[in-house]
Image 1 (spheres, helix red, strand yellow):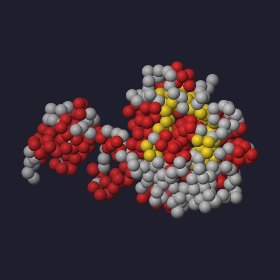
Image 2 (cartoon, one colour; image 1 turned 120 degrees about the vertical axis):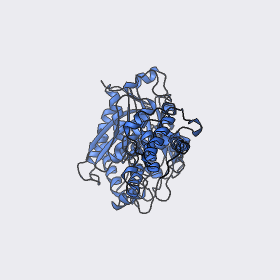
Image 3 (cartoon, one colour; image 1 turned 180 degrees about the vertical axis):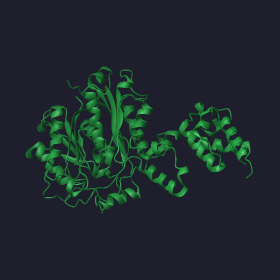
Image 4 (cartoon, each protein chain N blue to C red; image 1 turned 90 degrees about the vertical axis):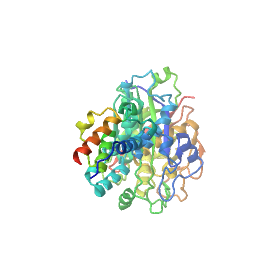
Length: 84
Length: 405
């Protein structure tokens, strides 16, 4: 399985988050979930999308540490690389 | 010492449109919101009323509730939540539903079957739980007093208003937002009600008519803002009416059929009148449960005669909101309370639409044909009763008074 690039993951994460409510053009790598009004239920949905698309399983403990969009992208990419 | 409770805001989303006034005006104009055997809120576009986040996190029944709440709370001057006259911890919220988030439940069951348990949405439960609507209203408007859903099928909306009345009457709260919401127009729900032979095979809602053959299912929501009367006056609120009385009993007779003598239902009417301190001759209008099923309309007629006295019952105009929008199940009692408030406020009684062929057994004044002016019985603010009955044998009557004018 080819590893995914950070850009690919970021663009997928932004698309997913935008579907949860915030405007896509507000969502950047350094946007925090707090300022985007993304809460724990949104992050569980995001984890579900990530698992479905990249086979990366993110648990509650993983998500708890995430503060920003960049944090989420980096975690997904590192897990995908580890499993590749 | 019981406190008085006034109504300062009303809101509705019904098959006749968004708005409490729209509901009453269009019904009074003899317009019918039913098409193809259902009362659908076809015009309702969530994005016109809700943010993207609200819309995607709420089942349609909660979307309808939040939209009706926005109208009611805006009218009360509560756009940003309870005004400073009220402690948010003493503002309650009670919103009923018959079934809850049926659309979400069905769609998530499809996800489970087609894509497996890992793909079931974490939003499933918070969307389809029957208290999802009350949670959404409480959260959006920061209502921190007691908040809960009510489950009593087609009497739920009326039970919700009655429960909110009680919490203010007896000092558990100083204000409350109350109502009901329902959206179950799915093939599964039609099949289920159809299997009971409860639905009209002709798709026509004509309560009390000799040809009535079942109810027509509809969707929608109704919300009322209730305030303790002195607090409402002190803050200068516009008072639309008063929830003056509430009575409730159970048939303990049959899962779906009403007790045919109407005795327990009559007792609910009597209890509501006692609570309001009114006698039958002070009632100017009855907003009937009037489902258009053979059994309900007969039992309700019997109950009205038993509770009000035969002659008095025949004198009072009786009409059914279900003749224009169908049966909104758990929302019905609340939407019909809203329609009753508007009837008393405008002094225009909308008709029982479709009522053309009298049933010899049913001999009240069902307001056939067209709307008529509400004639006051004694010069006091007008008063009405609104009945709600349900599968399970639940009986609820609300007594609503018009505002002093």
